[in-house]
Length: 157
Image (cartoon, rainbow, N blue to C red; front, side):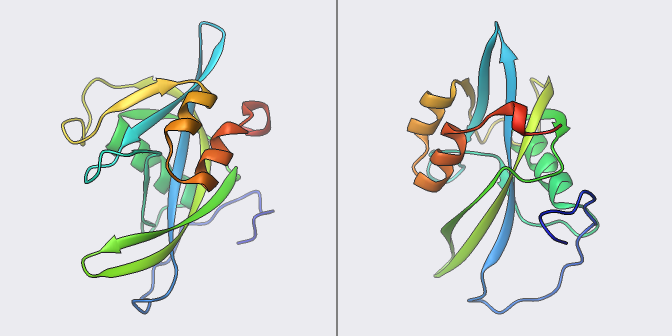
């Protein structure tokens, strides 16, 4: 699938070597509240850092669907997800004694529902904030750049 493709197909998962780059899918949840653009960040379970909801590919789901599933599990959010990514960033993920290179594809999601109860509610915090504040709270500079420059008009939901 090319980034230019209008239709995403479900992924077929296959094995990879331990040192191969991995892919995760993230969602940038947004809404307009009292006339102002707000985005939602969550804390990571292990370190408590502010991050976007993200996770691994899911067999049978498109990347956007996988990102939407993470938004529900990690933040209790549902909404309309733009079919095209708004950005990419990379980081190194610790898994046991290994450190894997990960490329994260970020999708924008206009939030239509924020549940009070969701699967990881007791493990994470979620917080709505403006773009500037959200980008300042993110420790990954590539991700902070994506959030700082987010324009919902360009995320064709």
